[in-house]
Image (tube, rainbow, N blue to C red; front, side, top):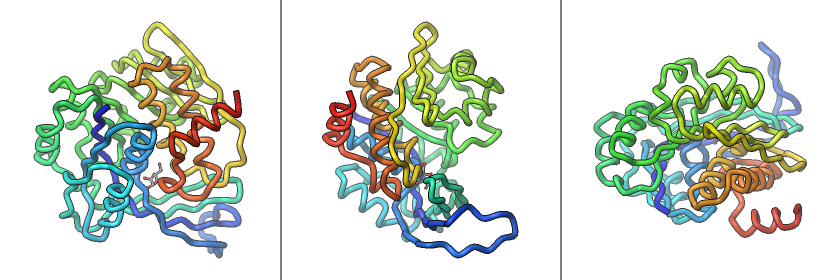
Length: 296
Ligand code: RIB
């Protein structure tokens, strides 16, 4: 299975906080770590660990070479990354003892991507089984439209949510994979089933909606399927959605039923949240299968 991930590459600066600070407050943090991150990087890694042959596109600066080195070391093709960015994207992530976080995101090179770059990438990967993208780079709409017109299957994770997402032509995204907050923001609906159905009416063929502790639901216009989450002690939820995305989509594209695909995604993300960090804590396939076996 050949996957092209067009996405973001960030340096994640993670601060462990006793609690999240109030407006105007200064708080000491209990610890600081730098991790590789970005939704593009995390999802590429999850897809690859699930079993796919993954190539990435996107843009970093010279300060981001270690991000692509990390992907290469993990068997992901990075030869089409553009290194001419001024600064690589970065995040400031504050995590609290319950594993919740808040984030400041500097787009940097991720937001300097041009339509010309997208054209050159697609010209090389017209035979991809899937183009997966998120909403942390420039040119997302252009990329989806172009890939769709070339007959490449497309998946969009419209994250992080910004209001302009509502104006996208969702018919260019064959699969829409998103969390409840994003789904509510796009549709204005409140419950999972109404959100999934309203999203489908916007044009995507398949909707996968994650619901945190309530698992995930799938809707394709006829079948509405839900899968449960697994109870674990979460230490850091950063990257949970990305882990779910890579594993769930891999299973779906491999022909698994939506329930099995979502369950595998939930298992992978349940493991991922038990350790601090995002990309480095995405489990490999063996761990996910063992987890699923032990919880059945
Ligand atoms: O989804 C988690 C990711 O969001 C982090 O790695 C951070 O870089 C932000 O892009």
